[in-house]
Image (cartoon, rainbow, N blue to C red; front, side):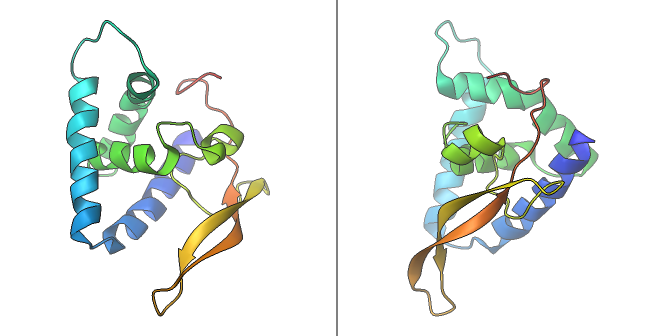
Amino acid sequence: MYNNILISDFREVFQIFKRIQTVIGKAIILGIMVIGFSFASTTLVHASVETNFIQQFKVPITKVSKENHLYPSVMMAQAIVESDFGRSELSIQANNYFGVKGSYNGQSVTMDTGEYSAKGKHFVTAAQFKKIPKYHGVHSR
């Protein structure tokens, strides 16, 4: 059941991600991918929030990405950017690491979010984001 939630959310995230076309956006994500997976692929003596996050999500993200022919590095980078390594209010309150809007089984949280108008003007508005049940195989808080 949780994999279906991840698959659905990952598809939504990647549809949004495909629209990100700026050079700065690509450079940031590429840098996070390189740094993130260099942390994940080495043995570290000192744990940190960042390495703990990568270690917790490395296996499920790799599994889901292989099942859906997606890049695990991009999925990890998106989770890092959207959730600030799991420290964002959205990830803490709703287990939503990708900023996916909507609801899941009628569950959601309402938070302020920055959006852009069709004319490119930035504005802040309240939006509903999916509240996803805890999956104990991924994290424990």
